[in-house]
Image (cartoon, rainbow over all chains, first blue to last red; front, side, top):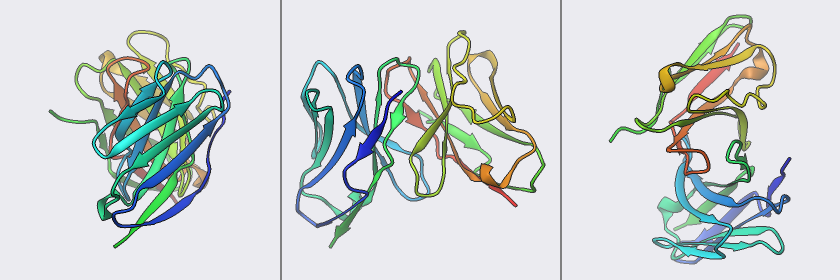
Length: 111
Length: 113
């Protein structure tokens, strides 16, 4: 199987600062990784993904870093805004059949 | 275009009753997933459909849970003889194919009294 853990269940940051949310996974065969954002009362929303042949990928204000050596995944949000307040999940798969999700980090942005 | 839709958005039922939850995936998506999310928890995989292949039912918690996907599109998750511990948000997601980005619906909030 797979276990997925986040380093911090909650994170508070000042508006304008950068946020870093981390995920650790156990199965080195995992080869596709996704970060989702979930706002209260809504389903998870795709943010960014990365495959195992890469170690970094950038989107708009977000960067995902993958360290396969230590089985660690992180999401960096630049210039965090109040609208970024949500729960963030990492998800990963190795078979394509079943995705494993972390328990989520609740990000609170302080104005 | 339309995203993943789920109905009903909320469902309150009495213990012992059966419930049916519906998911309409994004048109053209061959993969469909069901997850359960309890309050403050992560997503628990339930079942996965890919095209015409036999579904992966490895996440279903008991034989009270079943799911169908008719015509490779709409899916129904059925919970028989509901129990209070079944109370959760049931999320459906679809993707163009396996190991592609999953797009989630808004979920069905189930409360079993």
